[in-house]
Image (tube, rainbow, N blue to C red; front, side, top):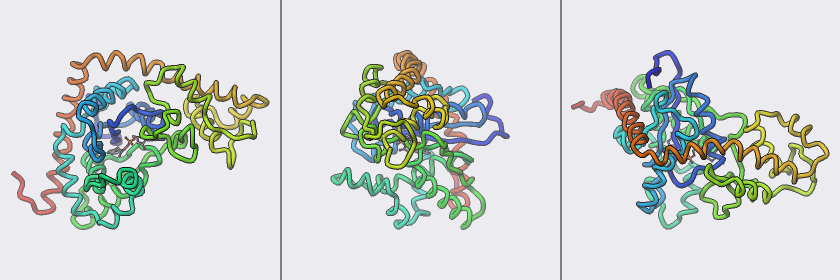
Length: 335
Ligand code: TYM
C-alpha cells in the first residue's frame, strides 16, 4: 500500500471464493497478478458477493472465503504492496452496482454467455443476481478507475460490457470512469479440462480428474496428468485436432516459459507418457511452495484479518471518491 503512487497504471482484478482454486485460475489470472505487483498499482479482491448468485452452504462458504484468502497470499499476493480485500467489506461495490444497473440494458445482460451457461446449469435458481452479475463486476472495476484488468479469456465478454457501461455513463454526463482494458496473457488464458479439452477447466466440473486444484497433493496431480485425454498420433506437436496435447503444451509452456518449438524438440521421438510426466512434474514443482505457504497462512487467522481489514479501509476510501463523483453527476444530493 505504501507505494501506491500516482504515476503507475492501476490494475484491478478479483476471484470468486467458490471452492478450491484451480490450475486454470492460477495460470490464467493469479500468476499474472503476482507478476504485475511491482510494475503497477494493483488492487485485488475476493468477489464473495458474486459467489451467492449460486446457493452456498453457510459453513462451507465461510471456509472457502478464508481458504481463498490464504491461497492468494500463498501465491504471492502481498497486501502491503497490493491491497487485497473482501468485496462484501467495502460497501461501495453493491451501491455502484445498483446505479450501473440503471445504465445497463436488459438485452445486453441477456447476451452474456456465462449467464446463459449458468442459468442452464442451475435451472432451479435463475435469480436476478445471476442476471445482473456483470454490472456488479463493472462496479468493482470502475470504482478504482482501473486501467487494466488481468483475467482469463472467459471474462472477456464481461470486460467488454464494463467498457460499454463506462463509455455510456461518460457520454451521458462527462468523463467519470476510466474505460478499462482487459489484460489477457498470450499463454495460459484458457486452460482446458484434462478430460474434455474442448471445455474450460472448471472447479464445478463433476469429474474431479478434469481439473487440478492449487492444493492437490503431488501424487494426485501426477495421476490426473497421466489420465489426461490426448489423441492417437503419439507426437508432441501443437496442431489442429490435438486439443488435449495443445492444452498440455500450453500448461507446460506457461509454467516453464518454453516456446512450443522448444517443447516439440524436447519431446521429439518420445511418447505421450514421458510428456505427461514432465507436465505433471512441472505443475507439482510450481505448486509446492504455494502449498507450503498456504499451510502457514491458513493457520494464522490474525494475520489474514489484519490484511483484509487494512485493505478494506483503503479500498473503501478510494472507491468512495468515484461513487460520490458518479452520484453527484446523476443529481443525487450527497449526505
Ligand atoms: P472466477 O472466480 O471464475 O475466476 C478467476 C480468474 O480465473 C480465470 N480463469 C481461468 N483462466 C484460464 N483458464 C481457465 N480454465 C480459467 N478459469 C478461470 C478467470 O478468467 C478469472 O480471471 N467474475 C469473475 C470474478 C470477478 C472479477 C471482477 C474479475 C468479480 N469482479 C472484476 C475481474 C474484475 C469470476 O467469476 O472469476
